[in-house]
Length: 402
Length: 174
Image (tube, rainbow over all chains, first blue to last red; front, side, top):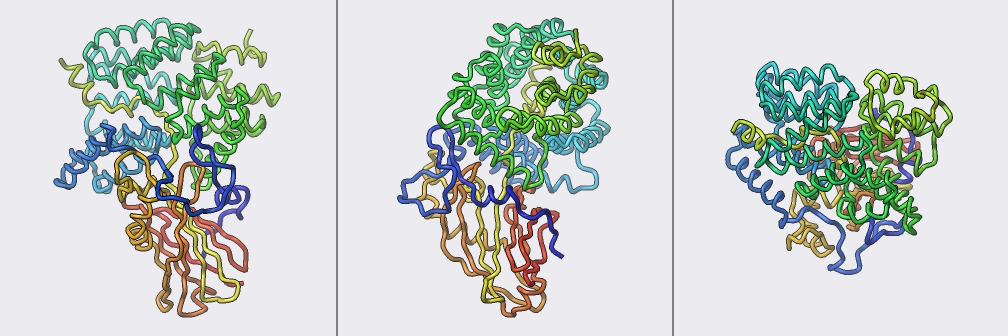
């Protein structure tokens, strides 16, 4: 029996006829069949460079693991380096490589807590929140003093809008990881629950009391401060925190994308193109490039849109649908399909409930003239007392708030 | 300093569940020959990024893979890929004959395209139920997916090949 899926449609018309290579500098024409490059010197694909210290560090950890293949610590060190790199460059391949590295231990009847935590992080990265939660709980039963597991758990609760549970997890972060880390956790949480001013003060404290902390920590806290300042409508402060965050982590895909959203909101699409020029392999970054090109009426904006559509189709073909927030935004802004955007945003809202998830649903409901579809989000905003001028303005437009 | 020690080991990925995708896909298409029921024509698109991770295509380490570097590594690429694709059943034996190699630009980067023919010793092996086993990259990346398309007289069918669904029975007959 051949496992049959729906007959090929646009998906495969696109996939098999696909082209449009590297954006920005050299956009290929929308279609060209497989070809023989004209010269050996033709450059086809950017790949992680050996000159990148992160690549060198991953190779060193790989060599360590190859030398001691049964050492779970060596495996976790490599897997976590892959996950960090995956996030940094916005490329999910490395999350898959990490999964393979820890596979011998995940197959055990009772994997060590560190392995469960790393596996949970990979699933969380793929938005498989329910199984990620289950693994985290197992890890914490084994190792209740694992601060990183508590922090991961708190983050997961926050992104799903479970703020009471997140608060408990933050308390455990304080117990197991120390006051500063606990303050950062709580600061993050309060930015979602109508206490953004207090949030900023907590984050400020977490920031100043951690002099000498790693760039990763500074970048993280500054990024949280930037988002909190946005929630307060303090654009100037938000911008300076984004810049400080990017000073600590200049190539972090997550921060770059958040800053690009800030620039798009502030009507500064021109700055997005150079900001994300080196990030085009990341789908989240690519969407912002496409939105910026569209806002600028750039001559290549059609190609950006086309390529983004093809990337979404490729995700659909492999059976991934954890990209609802971005896909809804794409459908509304570039596909001009409010109904489709609303469906995507509604499904996404069942999975994640960060301010941006509320926002895409409200925007789509407004564009589709279906205010009733936003009822859940409106109730959530009222209940959590979310402060976010962009979100609240939409709720007002929908007539749901005074 | 307790905090500092902890912060050194914290993994950045814990902090935000934002993902950014472009996981690994390859595209495998088989088309039944119009005349010869013992033959299938294949096209297999494999991402250069994936191959670089496994086989280090970027010889000069400049972060860019050129056609010359791909050509240099074609024997290794083909050895690896064809070693992870098998056809046959108990009685039917099939041979895979590599043909030309080209490049295709997909939306997420450049892919090497391997063209090949599958020739089976008995017509019923392609006309009946021929088993195909696929294991490209699964050992280094379990999230890899083979997007598979089969064109035959009875129409077109598709499948997503994964470690959990690594072999399929092809039905190419009418």
